[in-house]
Image (cartoon, rainbow, N blue to C red; front, side, top):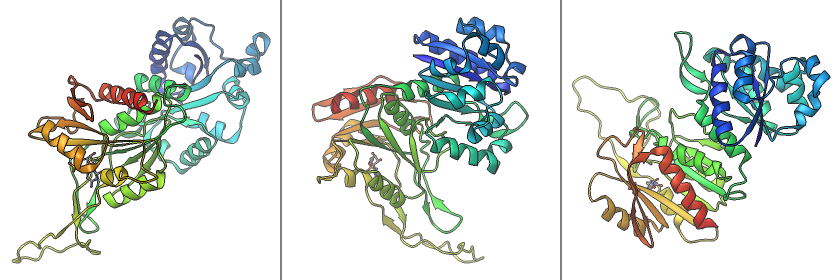
Length: 390
Ligand code: C5P
């Protein structure tokens, strides 16, 4: 793996050092270009020490040595980490006025961009338009994450953490066992409107489903993630369809077919209101609360698992139970017609938590997996999916 790292001006630039360390540990060769803005936040000496290579920071000095075209031809991937709003604007418009932008314009390698900036800069229509342009050209946009910033402020704009960036880079370069396969993953809760301001929901965070989508992509799969409303960042390199209700989720899944596998990790609301009020329901003093009539939602898992020409070869459901976890999962597998059920006990802190202890129920029997971080559960499951589709 040959990675050309472009470090531009952001207080998050120090995280590029940790990313380099992780990539080199994976056996990658890393060369770095430091922009003038980037050099305000990390030193060329630190980057040289951690890459083990000479750092390129000047267009004309580079011309005398290896030249920006040779530098552009060298990598398998150019990773812009962190990417400032200014650098992305230049990329979107083909401006080439320093070494980084010349190389970015000249390279035919894959490009991954990890934005980092103030939330207002990120939300600005100019930045959003530039991102859309880059994405349409096939640039992979990793993040940004949502959270506290250097300034006393919070919101989307944080650089994705180095570990997740490393996974994203592996996913982009993957020649993995799921290359050429398409997998649909559902994730998160659904929101079922009661009226224009109220809805029925549940505590699902989308952590497990999003981690599964990322793990499948890391093995080379083309992933469509159909996500209910969650606070999770989009996994890099994954096509995300955002939906609200169960009926929207089913429509998005059906629109994403055909697929080799479907992993239904979403906590779909079982019921919606029988009639959605078009105006906010009024609380009338002295009157009892209005009854809430419910209607059954479509079962997305059972629909995808139903026999037919478009049924994915492997359909996997989840079972969130608070009692008789395995017995209920075995019964659910038969009832839903899916191939596997990943069963977990949600009586503790699983929903929204970082870890999960699951049982994999297949035709062959039940496997009890140890309690693991949700990312590790996702990696294990993705590896099993790859095995099953091989
Ligand atoms: O029936 P139950 O909700 O316990 O089943 C859970 C499994 O079914 C999960 O995989 C969930 O994603 C899926 N499901 C679905 N559509 C529903 C309800 C559940 O896809 N309406």
